[in-house]
Amino acid sequence: MSIRAFFTFLCLTFSALAQQSLAQTLTVATVTRPPFSYVEDGKDVGFSMELLGALAQSLGWDYTIQRAESFTDMLDAVQEGRADLAVANISITAARETRMDFSQPIFEAGLQIMVPSDAAREPSLLNALLARDLFIAIGLAFGILLTGGMLMWYFERRSQPYFDRSLNEAWFPSFWWALNLVVNGGFEERVPRTAFGRVFGVVLVVSSLFIVSVFTARITSVMTVDAISGSVNSVNDLYGKRVGTIAASTAAGFLDRREIEYSSYDGLDPLIAAFEQNDLDAVVFDAPILSYYAAHEGRKFASMAGGIFLRENYGIAFPTGSALVEDVNQALLALREDGTYDAIYRKWYGARN
Image (cartoon, rainbow, N blue to C red; front, side, top):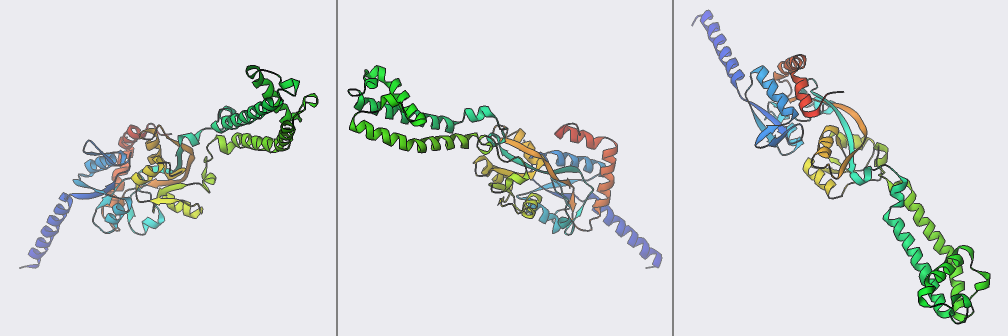
């Protein structure tokens, strides 16, 4: 074989391999994270899935979806080369950059706090006045005073003219007498005359300080801000609370750096289940994910607290050294320039600020 024929053979071989590579069906790893990626009516839908479809159309790709059980499994598939790329709500971080390559950012996000709806209410005097504990404290005070007054009436009705009344007429004067005894020390002209009445009167006077202090403390506790409103409104309020997030997430890393104790969960479903079962006072995670949940499945019992913090960008992940990165970046720029990206964004999130 001549040298010319040999080079011709090599060129044809590489050309055939290149064509085979282009025709190869790509494996795309993802994970269920509404509204970025989830299954609805048997179809893969979401912001990231729709953007992936636009990229595939632009680049002439064929691809299959490999839906992982967890976020870690999805990233492992990319790192180990079992997937050609991964797309969902993947934060671009320095730690992940050492293990895989990323496209240019496809979404700007951040972390946010989600709390139960009752804990998200603003403080108000009306809430305090209508608090159940306040009504219980008032009811107990009235019950004690009425019982003490009626006991005094029972033993004093034949000895003290003030208590010389029938049962139907005695309850309010007896209550009024007990109230004045506790608050003002009693009426000088209406002192008890029986032995039991005098002993009981002294007991009421001595114990009045305790009764008043307990009653006042109960009302004060109800009127404090912590008792009438949600106490989680910012990151600084998370200390000492039952906080939850997903293990190995950017939110978990943030909580570790702030030394905030938290419970970690393997995925979004167990995290949301713990929140719905009132096992958590607050959830810290990606703002778009929590906001979507609070506006849909959790709209009756979940609210967002405070603003977005720790701003971060999502990207498409590739195995280190992937030849697809440059093509994807060029295609993403083209999708932004021709308005396709903005149309997909508006469909899922409305107009951008």
